[in-house]
Image (tube, rainbow, N blue to C red):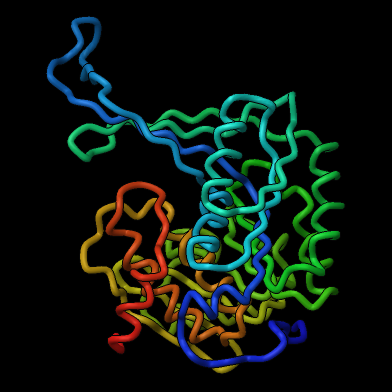
Length: 327
């Protein structure tokens, strides 16, 4: 088990933008550009039995680790993002969007790849299809990002590693070790079937299906707790947070199990909800909150963001108002 790490002092007090502004969050991981094409379906193609969509408008939003960063910045934290993009139009678009979101983005351009783009075609608020464009970054660019990561640690309170299995975190073991050696909490949004590469992190935040893929199925909360605590011990984690969709989220740490029921009033779109959760936890830890308090704030944030279309952010006034009501 690793020694507990975290911000200098644990300070209770709930969420406020003023409190969040004292935190410094470093986000590293796989970024992507989320593109949305909205249109109307009025006929079926004569060439094949598929709908013809007449595009009426389009939107672009930061996705992946970039969405984590914009959520942290929206909540008020000073946020820096390290990532790899292609030397292309999509990379330029991401840089522009993140600048507007007050994210300090260190983008390493790899001319041998294309920036990851997820294009969604939507009609009548229903997603008809998604088209992905992606290639893994080169080793040379990733090595340069590792050096920049180590240099950025002294100016950060919390590190968030957002793994979308696109190749941007090839050196994640070294990143975790460097951050922990510097006394910085490391939060990881994991991906894949092998979590050994995340060994030594402070917190993992898998969703229910991701955790089941690695740990196997469970029949009740007692079995879930047993599997979670076993994983926590085997990987040397301080805590494990399983987000459970309509069942809320559950935190497992040395004190046992802490559960928060869902606060979602209406679930409209769950894409990007995990980004919001880990961003909110990171912001709260960076400004001195304990993990159970950070989870409560993140649970509230998740309940807000799933009521929005696509990858979205939670704004301070949305998060602070219900917390003041004591909900």
